Image (cartoon, rainbow, N blue to C red; front, side):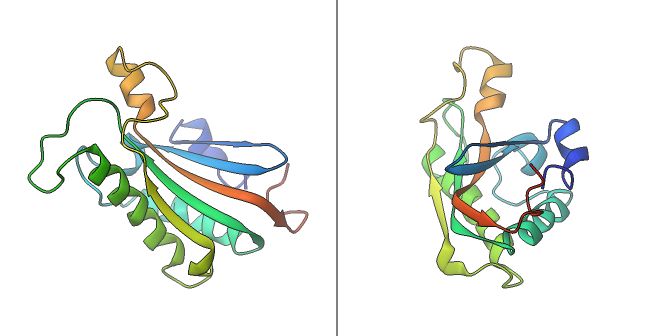
Length: 149
């Protein structure tokens, strides 16, 4: 997966981390969503489709989590950062299960709003890092070449 997503990782659109229990693919919100929106940017769909191809060869539960910064949202559509973060997670889940390569029973969406920040929300740059969507694969069991570690 890392080799497949090499260009996106190099451009800092996303990050992949892993340990013995999980793999986390983390998207910046700037790369994946317009400010205040839950609609995936067109350029993100092919990236998620690459991830789907890899995940279809794996077993393990998939949790898609949306996060925001600590700034209140000003939107007629979303009541709060909770709504926005959950809606973004659901948008990614829809893309994951769209072509039915991944069993929907394996996938869950969660909105976390401003909880669990990666860094302090004290600067615009840090707030940008905290606005993200993560795809976490719990206890992945994959073919030897799926993740290319």
